[in-house]
Image (cartoon, helix red, strand yellow):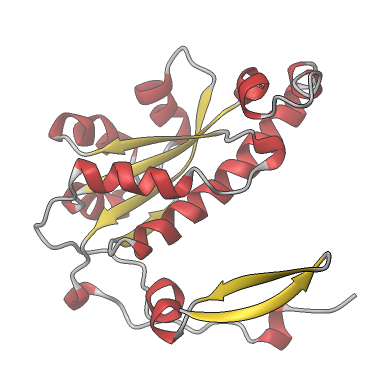
Length: 210
């Protein structure tokens, strides 16, 4: 960890920046895992994971993501028929599969999460399309933070689409306002089962200035 000094509003702030080891852990050497070592992920680790993820920024602090940690054989069997064939083996082998969902009625908790604005919930309660888009976008953001936090705790990640969302929602979120976004396996990856790393776009290919 290295320190970078910045000045904001006349106050000298110490901004911490990760060193190369931290950047390697989170980004440069991190891989999408498809194979897993037979090592359990403790509940305490998942609770610690949430303690990090909950600090992720979201619109109006709405925190619309809802996470289902599928760890039991019963839970895996409920999930299995929802998966695309190519995802079945990796999910069944993973110690944890997280269903990252989003609550379209997240606005009901805004009096607690965003207490300084009395009427902000009405923006969403009276506009179902806005509530859906906001919940989906911000749960995606929270899901990305979940993966960063997992890597920071020494876990490997295997995010995926490739599932029947309607069937999954019936199996896990029936009679609720929660919908599925994507899945992510967590555990301790087997490097022997990694595929070669694929190319990435350059700065010039992906980025512009305006």
